[in-house]
Length: 394
Image (cartoon, rainbow, N blue to C red):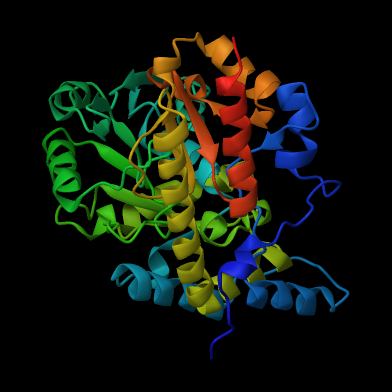
C-alpha cells in the first residue's frame, strides 16, 4: 500500500542540533566554527522511513531492553531484499551479523593476513580503509584509481603487479568518495586478477542501494569465480539513514571462510545485536522500497541541480560524474590552492563544512567531498555560499 512519500518528505528541514549528532553538534570541533553548514559526515538529514520510526516507537513501548537475538524474520527480510533489489539469491547460513562495516574491514584484515603481510586499497578511498590495515600491523599497498579526462577507472596493470605481493584487497563498490559504480566487466577483470594471484577480496557494498538510474550495481559475489574469494559487506544504514544503530552484515557463502571470520569477531566479544538496531534493520529491508525509490529520485535531481549550478556559476569547480552514493566529489584543482587553503576557503569564506579530499589519500589533493543528503534548499544555500565566496576578491 502506498505511503505517499514524495519530494515534500525530503524537502523538510529537521533540526538535528542538540541530539548528539556528529554532523551538527560536532562541527565546532571539526571546523573551528559552530555555524558552518555541515555537509561532511556521511549520513543524511532526511527522516528514516516512517515504517522504521513506527516500529522503533512500538519496540520502545516495551519497557525491557535486554539482550536480544536475531530473529528468523530479520534474516528473511535481508534474504528477500537481496533477491528483490539485487537479484542475488543468498542463504541464511551465509549471513554474519556485524556491528558495522568498518569493524568488518578490520575483521577481514585480521582473518586473511598475518602481521607484516600486505593489503591492497584503491585510493582516493574512504579513510578507514587505510587505518584498518596500518593499525593491524599490516603493510599497505596502494593501487590508486586512474583519473583521466574527469573519469575514474581501475588501474589493472598496476593491480596485477600489486596482487603478486598481497593477500587481501579491500574494494569499495560503489566507490566512496569518487562515486563510481563499477561495471560488471570491470569487476570480472578484477576477479580474474584475484584468481590468478590467490587474492581475497572484502567488497564493501554499503552504498549498493544508492545508485542512479543510468547505472546498475553489480554485486561482486554474483560473478563467476567469486565463491571462495569474496566476502560482501552490506547494511541498511546508508540506504535508510540509520547508521547510528550500528548493524550490518557480511555475506559469506564459503563455510570455511565464514567460520574464520566469525572466530575473529568472537575474540573481540562485541555483540552486534540490540533491540532497536534489530527492529530497524528488519523493517527497513521489509518495507523500505517505496521510500528508497523516492529518495533515489530526489537525490538524482539534487545531483543534477549541483551539476547545472557549477556549470553556470563556478567554472573552477568541476563535479566528477556521480553514478552512485549521495557524496559528490568536487574537483577544485583549477582554484590553484593548497589543500590547507582550500579547506579554509570553504570554512572561513563560504561557511560550509565539507570533507577535504586529502583525507582520502594523497590522490584526493585538490578535491572536496560534498554530502547532498539534505533538502534541496540547504544544498542550494551551500552552493550560493560557495559562489559568493568564489566571486569575492581573494
